[in-house]
Amino acid sequence: MSRLHLHPETHLVSRIGWLRAAVLGANDGIVSTASLIVGVAASAAATSEVLVAGTAGLVAGAMSMAAGEYVSVSSQADTERADLARESAELASQPDFERAELAQIYVDRGLSPDLAAQVADQLMARDALAAHARDELGISEIVTARPIQAALTSAATFAVGAALPLALVLLLPPGRLVLGVALASLVFLALLGAVGARAGGAPILRAMLRVTFWGALAMAATAAIGAAFGTVVG
Image (cartoon, rainbow, N blue to C red; front, side, top):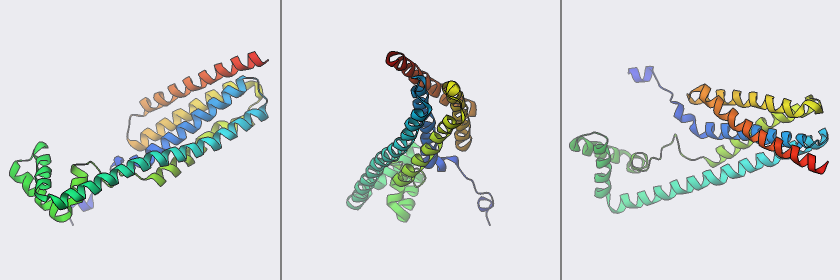
């Protein structure tokens, strides 16, 4: 058995499809629901009204995330299928040109023309469309679009993220709701940034600062609007 079989590698890029949707969903769930709760609570609304608003935000947000991810990733998948169909037709109608095109890609990457031609010949003999999809179009199994996976992941993680600040509405007294939800949500966002960065192999501190900054900005804006609205109504 070769050393490659004894030492298999797992690359983090294989997680990019579900990880992006998961982090996006959870981040949006925390930020949007916490901002909604903070804004409504800052307007001096009753706890029951804050709870209803937060629950509605959770349901609507999860459905919106699922629909948005499905539509956007489906568009990407449609584009990939169209490119593959066009490439398949070109391989059937002008195989010599496509072989030369693939060889030139390998030359541009540093292979000699003779070696590039040999590599192109062998890869096309095995699976011409797969070779062109990977090296010409940049489409591979690892990063290919998966609409259903993205939609379900985003909806589920949005709901989980939104449930965190929503639960605080039941636990905190009305007088401490705005500050308590804001601070706790920033902690949730920092943890999410750390988890997402760790799963993706990215710098943890940078991810934590990034998500907490935008979360704090969103909650500050909605708190200001809620307080102004409450003053006017009152």
